[in-house]
Amino acid sequence: MMNYKVYGNGQPLLILHGFLGSLDNWHSIANELGQYFKVYTLDLRNHGKSFHAPTHTIQDMVDDLHTFIQTHALKMVHLMGHSMGGKVVMEFALQFPTIVHQLIVADIAPKLYKRGHDDVLKALQEVNLEGMQSRKEVEAALLPYLPDFGVRQFIMKNLDRNDTGHYQWKMNVPVLLRDYEQVVQAIAPNRHFLGDTLFIRGGNSIYIQDTDSYQMKDLFPRYQLETIENAGHWVHADQPVRLKNLVLNFLKAVNAT
Image (cartoon, rainbow, N blue to C red; front, side, top):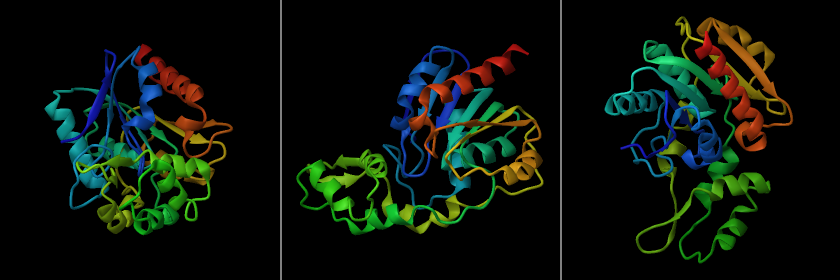
């Protein structure tokens, strides 16, 4: 079963996090958007407090999302996804266009990506949590692999304790290591979602390039692209207010027409 949290009331807006993230990454923005929508933040399979599964593909997560929407009897939903979550909501909208009202994709394009998390995956594989007594000790062990403070803090949010009180990672590391290539695959072409779609990219991020517009327009003819300056790939962490305002203005404008 997928772990989730609900904020506010109104039309349903579902938010999906990125690779190695969790619903906690979106708490502040979801709390703000909950003044206007009923916001659901979800932990995707093998992440956060959601179930661990033997496979981890985009289609797996699309199926999980569809089950969640059916289980909660949601009709027309707004979908927003960041990075891996963006791939999931894009694929979902293409497969189930009658369920999706508007689509928001944060800092990811529908193209094939090169591997980009090998340093993090190596750290998760190499650092042995057994016997560690404090978070500071874990962070010190991660430092040689992840010298960037922000990346270390992001990964440390996945640190948890098991029933015996020992540290463990919340995510299903072995499966994510094995199926990583599935996550970076391109969204298959020759399909269309005709609803309004907003792509948001960080001005300092390389994930969405101007040359990606052809693929975006092919799959999502009614798309628009907005850039948030002074933000990297984690646009929701770098510029949360500007991201929230972009999302809110997009959803309000569309719903007013």
